[in-house]
Length: 239
Length: 229
Image (cartoon, rainbow over the protein chains, first blue to last red):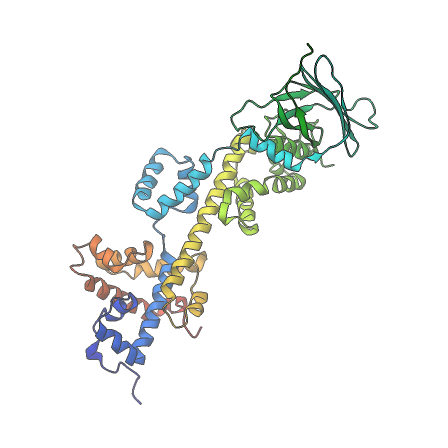
């Protein structure tokens, strides 16, 4: 019985099947592999060995993920930093990884406005239950809002907005300390945001804002509360 | 309510978790002394560890870690970040407070763990993509891909040592390193080392000789994938 072998060894030289593997074989070699089952099998075996070696060794000369993360975050000693930097300069893959980690570090923290809008999205929205136009030394109004067991009263006057938040059946001693914010669709990220502390009795006040529609965000206790569509008109004075 | 023996008298783990969540959601500077978020970490790594504090950390920082992992965020990678953080602290010899004097230092280290996990996930994905591309011309690509051993573990270490010990000369080392460490094409290897390879055919010949020798090596047989399995 004869061993299975190449149909014509004279047609194949050392290196030809590896060139075939890389898609760089001559037309004669391509034709030979198409006709010779033995060489086609050899190509498949070389391909598997090649793949296993790549799986095992690919980027083995690169710094480990730990070292590269330390490098990107500036946590290496001076000597090691120089060594890793030399590699990163010549290795596009590591260079890309370092850039990605640094982007992560340098990421601009969210603006105050973005954080407040996030809070607004999660806040309980209080519904208006009473609204009275009550000119007081000019134009103004009073309003009452409720949500769950919380009542908020507001009073808009020419001088500004005052308000109070309290629980419906709260016993004495409830601490309402927190922050109140006035936000509008027109508010830009760099703007100085109207803000008022909420004292322990739930009181807050703002200087009168520019005319427009606002949302009042109250951060008090465990909850954030939103009062929407708070209107401020042009200041009217009695003649 | 869990109160850790080393914990400051005024704070329970539950208090710290609540205050930390509140502080974080408002992005406030810590209003409490000590910082409630820092307290959670300190208690989680105290002796004995406070499981409630660790659970509160996982709940509180899960989203942040996911954010740091970006496109590689998933349950497994997020868990890997926390696991890595946990293991490093468990193996440390100095006390937690000495290694991490502030919540900023803790966050810096957690971010480092996330960065390392992110790089590893990136590399694994890159390696898989590369292998798939290499094998897509094979008649049984999926089959072979499933049998190629990933680059990890003791077996991989033995395999690597054996393979490296079989490289005979500088030409073989240059072909091997260029091909498998950096995924360079034969033409690029020739361009890098014209002193060793006058033309690309020489690179093919050296690689052919090397692959066939490694393939025949009896000590390496068990490591090669086969189409038949």
